[in-house]
Length: 127
Length: 127
DNA sequence: TAATTAACGCAACAAAGTCGCATTAGCTAT
DNA sequence: ATAGCTAATGCGACTTTGTTGCGTTAATTA
Image (cartoon, rainbow over all chains, first blue to last red):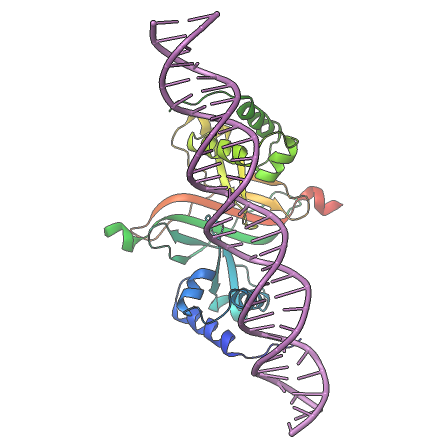
């Protein structure tokens, strides 16, 4: 099952590239002017995650956000141990550069790290 | 709008007390043998969160988990800056004691911390 | 250029959570 | 005790988020 290049895939990718934030499905759908079907967008995003092109963040609003992660892209063993900040006002979800290490109790094996801090970003704080 | 003591509220509270893990809505519903209405459970849990009795964790499965936090209970200014571990096998969600401090960029104001690590817990790892 | 099959669009579905509304039942003050 | 106020409940409908089945379309490759 090799991947194919389709206009939809290219379009989603370019939206993700232009935004330097993590995007939710509905943000993408809006950016794409509703030209691509809901299910298709979800499938494209899931494929991106499988291929390690993007990573998935589940924010405290319960929604999935997708961000392409350049650093992790080339090194296959990606850790993604960084936080994301979600602004409650402008709803932007951005990566925080801080790498965080949490040491688990003995015998625990980590598979996925999901850290989100929500609040007000500096742009919205001044306004 | 003062709170009232009802059997439902007491029941939910006692289930949360007995479990020393965070529980999702459906876990509670099951533990209560379906005696309490879905909506009611949700409302009780939301009230608990408002009152600072429990805190809400949104895990990477997109579901809300509720845990009563004894330490934070008495001190009103609760930070909750600790991680939670969700086992992909037994589905238990437990608090990790490590307090984590993430320093945000200048001008950012944190309102909520939501850190979840999923993987395999020590009980399930041996099995 | 034909064959293969990944990707698409559409529709239906599932799960999680919320909300409106009529009814019930805690609390409080008589 | 008891009457009155209104918080809490149960039911149903609804929204949102995400997935899946299926028939069709189109990207690759030989």
